[in-house]
Length: 139
Length: 114
Image 1 (spheres, helix red, strand yellow):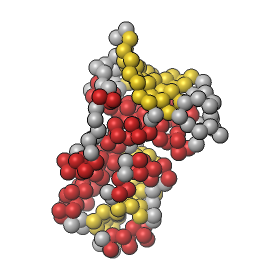
Image 2 (tube, rainbow over the protein chains, first blue to last red; image 1 turned 60 degrees about the vertical axis):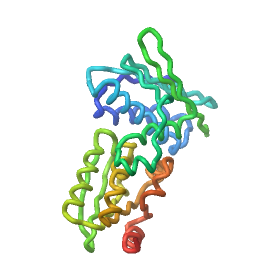
Image 3 (cartoon, each protein chain N blue to C red; image 1 turned 90 degrees about the horizontal axis):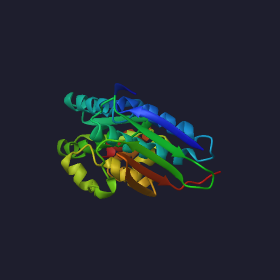
């Protein structure tokens, strides 16, 4: 099954993003804990995109797609036309350094990389496509 | 959306988090903790029993206070997390950097022993 959601880049919309993902995944026999991890990873990706690539401009939209088929990994795509930011190029800071520097950021990328099995980027005709892939257990 | 309630018990400040903390609401958590510190509390309990969701923005707030609390001898214990919220802390290993109790009784015991 394919699910699509278009959303403006206001961080007030993150709740809607999470509800969309929960709604899409809830009837496919995936455990609540795995759903909650994917919701978290996508929240982190979308908030990064809204804040860093689109400066929280609610008039700039991006698209979120979910492809879920039984016994296949779940595939998420985030499609936008802002400046791209490849988290694979970003080495996450050590936890100890985050404590020391009292930084409130940097944890999100660590979460996404811990949760997702694969993160790929593609650029085509002015669009950035970020694909996140997660292997899950189906009941 | 997050609602935050504060109450005091036995000289400790209890900050109850109700709802979801994400990038749009983590500032509320930050302000609540800062207020507690500003009012001079040295024992802070964070009631997570009605916390339904937390993203890295909220986790970062807790992380950002670790050093200051060590320096000022302020003790903070979180308690009452549901399985999903607890899992979020564990993915990052934050359960080893923060004090996390099962329930309020255990959290109070932990804060007295810190």
